Image (tube, rainbow, N blue to C red; front, side, top):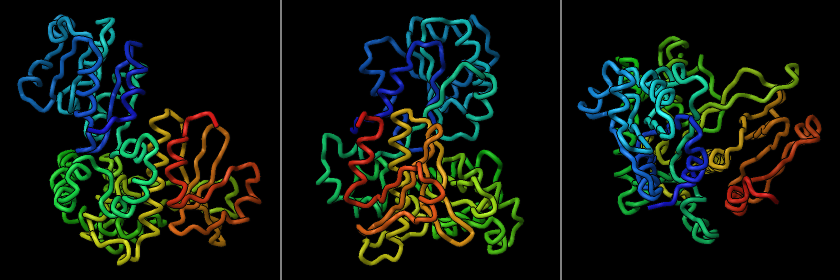
Length: 378
């Protein structure tokens, strides 16, 4: 059992007349974390699983009186897999508007149905939180930097999913199970995807391009489909928390790339499972890309759990000068270069264009220190 950093963030927003919505990929530990948190709060609570048919029926034809009966004397109500309940957004709106001093929590395994069913009815009535695969700050807490350094090569191959870490001796089997049985469940159900083979082929192409700029048109040509189809499939993969795209950071359209996107996976272990490559680092040619993806995700996790409102980009000029990762917080930007080796520098083209930006080279020697210090006063 790992202590999840998102617990403290969630608890700080309890009983403020807001529905707390927790989203994240399947198998990242949402239900485990929420149940563990509620068991230790000392408040009467109930957990309703939206995948169970009798729970779905409870919310059919909702009325305020019927919903009050469901809540009963509980002070906390957790609706797990909330997107499986028809009209869940309307039900939560009735609950939050008519039942005071009760904390309502909704969790879901993707943003697909959650986005449509909850966001609009709950406008102004909810906060959304994201749970990712485990972070190095959670696995190697209390200054376990030596253990992290020792295990880093393993994580670049097998990633950070809880079940994978808890079953390290069978990591490959667990990863392939997650990738094959859970990864596509929401996507295939959501849009009635009729070409799962196309989805697989697209994912494999994207897996070979992590950290690189991706051309929708080139992917469409390779897959022999329309660019619009590729773009819609990538959008679904993003909403299911399999991949995410970075836009380019642009303030000078005459000199900087404006339209391309970079692709990363939420977990490098899932990426490796998709291409069925679990070779050790010394036998791989993609170590730099894996390190970049891994380091980017650890920074994003740390910012999320410290409630830092950041936007993320990459930067490149038309002359091919580039920076891997740009973090923007309010009006301040930080530029990161991810280097598996210890040497590296930020291109002068960037520092000349943005002299007020902070810059850093992130390598295996300093990533741990960076992510555990995020959000602390230095």
